[in-house]
Image (cartoon, rainbow, N blue to C red; front, top):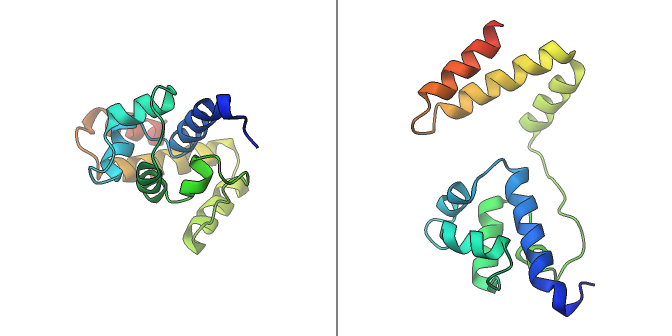
Length: 134
């Protein structure tokens, strides 16, 4: 159990770790909450400057998808369990079965495809293409 004086710091660490595990910045995570939590609030939570409310914890947990509000609020000590869809499991198995070069290619292709849905991706797409070629 987390001590009372360290609660904000523990919440901050859990939120930051969950966000970073998804490769998101604070602005991207805020967008995933549909306007329920903005990036300034997320920054304040992650710095321990502001206490995370139950409502915000629910919104952030739903946006992240693999953690619960209880976990973010340090009410649940269990680590979140990553649940993969069948296609995600196949992708992970394929990645693990290849050599280092194959893993680089898998990552480059995944990044290239993911960037297709993001704004302002020309530079990133060029970088991903270069990885594929080289």
